Image (cartoon, rainbow, N blue to C red; front, side, top):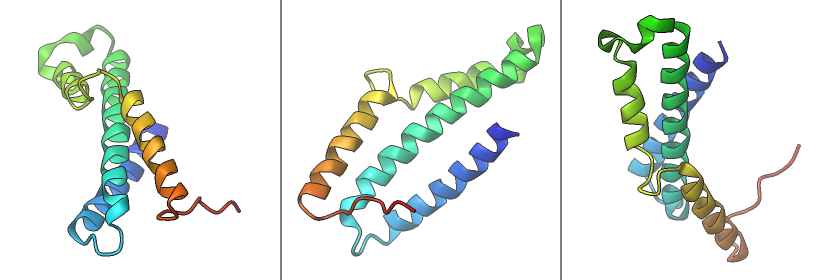
Length: 111
C-alpha cells in the first residue's frame, strides 16, 4: 500500500508541476526546481515499483511478458547522465539555497 500511496502523491505532484510550468507568471524561479525534483522522485519511484513487483512475482518476474525489465530500463534511462539522481538533487539544494540567499524564495514554514 505505501508504494501505491507514494505513486498517487507523485502523480498529483507531477500534475501540479505541469500546471506551474504552463502558467509560470510569478513563479519563474521555481519552475526548474520543481521539474528537477519531480523527475528525480518519479524515476526513483518507478524503479522501486518495478523492482518490488518483479521480486513479489518470484521467478515469473523475470519473464519478458511481465515487462518489469522494460520499466526498470525506463527508470534508469530517466536518471541523469551521471547515473544517479543524487547529483541532480544536490544541484536542486544548491539552487534553492541561492534563491533563499537572494530573497527570491523563502524557507518553508515549520508547524
